[in-house]
Amino acid sequence: MPPTQHPTAWDDPATRRAWRKLMTWAVLGQILWPATCVGLMAWYVRMPIWTLWFFFVPMIYSFYRTFLQRFYWMGAYHARPFLRHYPWQMFEEPESGINLGDIPGAQRGMAWLKFPNPEAPDEHVTIAMDTHVRAWWWSRRLGKRAKPERKAQVREIWFAGDPRFAAVIAAPGPRRFYLLSQRPDKRDLADPQNAGPEALARARRAGVRLPESTPQSASESPTM
Image (tube, rainbow, N blue to C red; front, side, top):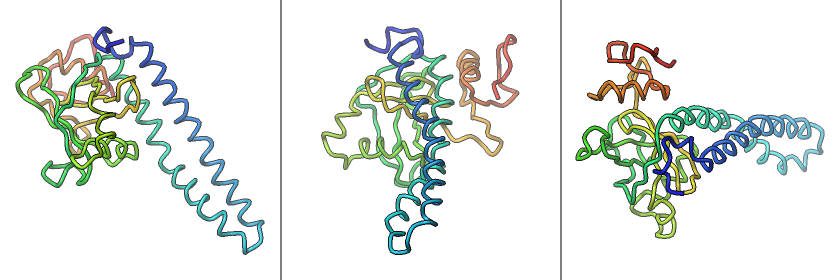
């Protein structure tokens, strides 16, 4: 079903199923990878010396995944408010590339995309990916050097959010959720970027932290 037929992305049953699957695996990983790491360490100290190399690599990898796993479930957790407050929009081959140092505040070598400004469709806003491990799947498909079969997987991108603040992108399905966000200032506050009161109110409901001086609905308070 086309994503634009639903008032919000969360109203799409396929979106809810995909998000629950993502969160389930993220939470399971938060339990299983640490358990695997501890188990391998316990086994490591009991085995003969000549077998230790067989356990060293799996143990290091499980430790690595234990460290990264929190980013998986945190990403899924923070993506949900955007799915609940913004509809899916479908973009066919949006302008994208790999940051070569020309995007201030963005990590060199990571992918970026451009999406229309919701209040000025003729203007486009650049939003870059972070160094999160899930970004590599997208980076290998959005760059100019990406293989055609990989680029075909992201020819159509689903988008839920406001590129001036943050948004969830997904491959058609939806699948491969990834939360994009503009770089906040040192106080972790987003730049209002001349957004109107309605756009600011919706961004706050989705969890974006904005300066107190920006307009907001009298019936709501900023989401922390």
